[in-house]
Image (tube, rainbow, N blue to C red; front, side, top):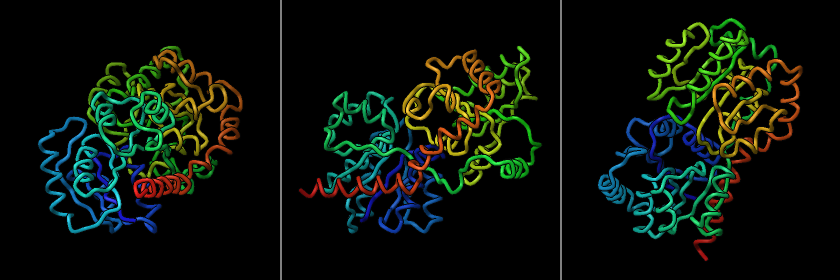
Length: 370
């Protein structure tokens, strides 16, 4: 099976981790050629794996349609002598390129979407295109089906997977080693893992910690892993609230560092406005860490309030603070979290989820050949 994979984003995020899982896990079954923006995380990782890669001008979320048409033409010239079984795309700019190539080569195209929070242009494209859609979240699948954005026989769902050999339930020894690797003293940690953009609500987590500090109920430091355009604004917020001793920013951590980062946590916080099936919550669950998160996307499927964390309908700082305090003050909450997560987490093993995607690939080829 030969697949042309086209991605629109250059940064490291959930979509790129989703793709990396497919590239690593299905390499014995699928021959991937990867197309990405210039200097992108995914193209570098794919190249390191020995895969065929091509970097082209693509931008997201803003994009130039004329540039996408030009890029499609150049890719057609480059790959016209090759025979792909279908085209796999993620995000709208890549889908526009993929649709043009799909029409030229008369092969199917698959568009992956992360969540139910789709911009109008996405919806219009999906209604007009005859492509296949794969949602990386149950909530996204339900939204697409309920709003008639794609026929049921062209719609699939496959949530992300994580490497359970790396993410494991906390143990005293491994947690101590994690602090040592980050050159930190062992302490209570409230963790945040997110791209530093407005939608992720990292400012709410900081403000929640400030509320806890003011009331004398901040038993932990807040450690934030991620980077993005809101970094300076968030650092200014920390300074304005006089929280420099309580909040620490890390640069963008590499995937290989994330298991240790979760090992240090006592609680994971995700106060986002919109989400699909957050890989960060799966990683926290696999690490045995209670979660406080917005009740968006697939979060309510993963987090059962009062059992392995809390979901919040309106993630205001005061509510976030209240639920963090509740976890710290509840005896054996972390132990109950681990017991609840134990039978759930194995279904999100990266090999299990990648093989579900491979089954979808086969169904598309069979459906398109009928």
